Length: 81
Image (tube, rainbow, N blue to C red; front, side, top):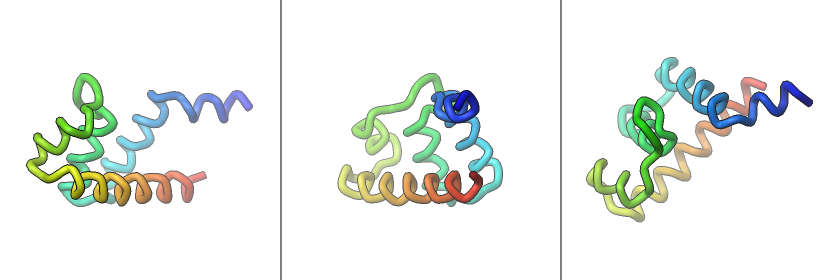
């Protein structure tokens, strides 16, 4: 139970996502989105409107990309357990 709780902290999630990024499982757009969305390498995560502005894409496109990337992250993390 204690190990399970350690895996659920924001810091643990961030470090696991960083490992996935280091393994280059994502293309440049996906990696950039992950860094902005989860605040990896920056002070804090950005809101979706700011991410769309920074990445120069429309909100609808961003929403679809976020769903795709989150699913990909989930599947990689699930397979590691």
